[in-house]
View: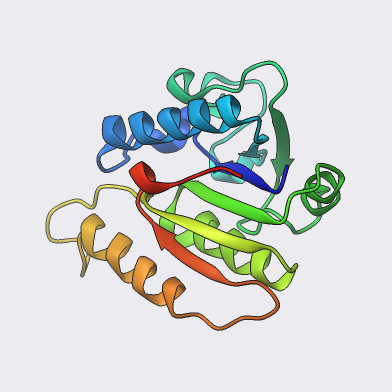
Length: 179
């Protein structure tokens, strides 16, 4: 299989304050179902760090039930923003024959951005699902930009990023195809 769905950090502890939580969960659940139906691997990255609030074994650490892994899916723990750093993500993807990563998850500014950029430098093509990654709600008067602005900013920046050997395209969830 050439493409795989990558679901980043969709864990209960992070989703407590997520902007458009139900919409994001629904879009990612739909993508996962379509990937499985097409025979494409579904790969989950899970933050495994006490400093993040994602303490292994706790309810907050678990991947949200709406997008939970199914038998046959791959779950890989990570300890930082870049899902390729210090783990076996690259080896697992290459072992599955993956060349294109369809990237979704949480949080836009941190793990989604870092992992998408790292995927490019590892030679993968990236399809960033424009409405398939999310961020946290900001308390009124605290942040300079809204969640919508942050997501739009990262979509724009990543869509024009030139970082060979991989290439990145921006695609809404409804238009993603798995090959």
